[in-house]
Image 1 (cartoon, one colour):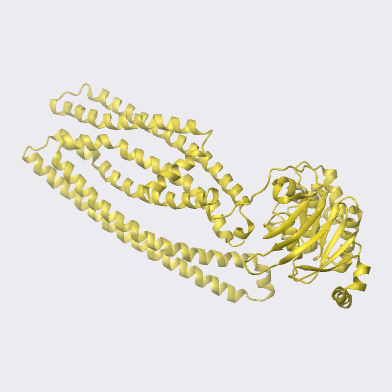
Image 2 (spheres, one colour; image 1 turned 120 degrees about the horizontal axis):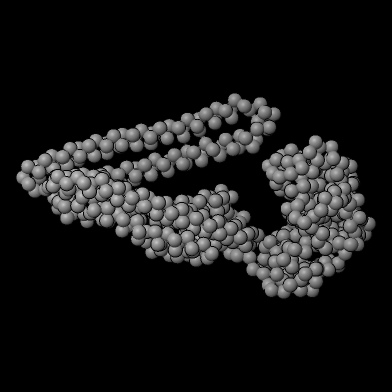
Amino acid sequence: MVFIILKNIRKIYGYSKGFRKYIVRYTLCIPLVTLISIIVPIYTAKQIIFINNGTYNSLITAALIIFFFEIMRNIIRLISSLSIGLFFRESVRVIQLKALKSLLSIKNKDLDSMPSGVVIERVNNDCSKIADCIPNIIEDLSEILSNVGIIVTIFFLSKILFLYLITASVIIFIFNRIKIKKWAEFDKQRRKANEYSTSFICELIRGIRDIKVLNANKSFLNEAENRIKEKNKITYKGRKFLGLFRLLIGSISDLLDLCFILIAVYLLKNNLVTITALITVYMYKNRIYYIFNTYSNLQEYLKDFEISSTRVLDIIEGDRYERESFGNKELKKAKGNFEFKNVKFSYKDGIPVLKNLSFKIKANTTVAFVGKSGSGKTTIFNLLAKLYDIDDGEILMDDININELTENSIRGNMTIINQSPYIFNLSIKDNLKITSPNATNKDIKEACRLANLDEFIDSLPDKYDTVVGEGGITLSGGQKQRLAIARALLQKTEIILFDEATSALDNETQEEIQKAIDNMKNEYTILIIAHRFSTVINSDNIYFMEDGVIKAEGKHTDLLKKSKEYKELYEKELKEN
């Protein structure tokens, strides 16, 4: 464990460039605190001798000197504590950002199998744990070092009392270790019950509208009550254990203090210790207990640090997850030509999605992909954006293999409007400026006009400053998609991919969006995936897909004549409408 901790500390320290002045400040403070902690007990012991000699003239001066040193020690400790806190606050911020950056570089096939809860726990909670653990570890180590002077002083004043206090401290330490171990077991159960309860309450809050409509209030409240009861039962059991153990340890401490007094009386009666030494030992005996308790806490912090740092560094530097790779060729402004050459792809081994797929798309044309669900249409978009790597074949962008292009050359030249766009809990304007922070109010209004969203926004009391809630909860499905379309239009890329972007719109709104798409024709390379044939009938070319291959291609009127399957799908939609 020690090797892993030291290795992880070294790695985290490597991310601290620019903040190491705080470590230097801290390093200078620690020897001063330790030195004062050694001097003060020894000086105190010497000054108490004045009491025995009946010399009180210098006692007040000595007390003031001791007070001065103690104040100085507290100030230096505050400076060292703040320094190490600043160091790790800044370092952990860098680590958190690096973890997020590394997360964005992990291949989607690995992200697909990674629960979001695990990601949040590592990037947020584990990074916070590191920030909390390291200052506590260093603080505890410095506390142990700073009390070395007290141990040495007591040893020289009375070896018998020294041995007794060490023995008493070990006894308390053993019981504390038992308490910590047992509490860890209770805490594990409590955390699990808390997650079980919290997850259900979150589901209840997210689904509160559906619960009302389903008239399921009673059953949900009963389930919530059962989970809360279970959590509270385990929590109470743990707290009861802690209370009883505190009573036990407190009673043992009181018994040990009684034994200390009895031993002290015996030593005094037999002239084995002076009153000066006894008073000094009594003043500082709790520091020895504190050292052992600090060491116990230190072990817990080290364990937490080992787990949290390993989990975070696993994302930043680990080889558990595959990273996205890009080339170094820069394509500042793409023309919009694409070509698939014998492309094979599967999300899972042995289950092919695209089978030797080949086609060409010319710049500034509007091309559509149609077919039943599962035919591989969305996969084409995923591969064009290099969200996944192909198994075999080639994908060319302006006659360059996309594996040779930089990330920005690929993703910076295209905009994908998904079927279920995510709308952030921000204002409408801020949602639009996420992709285009320099967009003017005029640009924003024009994009909203093209997306047929301007009239709706103007009807709102706060207009473009309206906050739409988490996931765009205050917007309808159609409004969310139109906002996503406006957001994409602001990016002004040469290539726009519509992945079922009009699926949630009513016929009237869909016609308006279709007009916007038509207005962009011949100026952008537009790729459309749609179930609605009304969205694609004006396309320059349509690829009809089935089971990962292109069954037919051509304009809408041509496909009606030469493809039976295409004609059947089209006629089925006409009947449904």
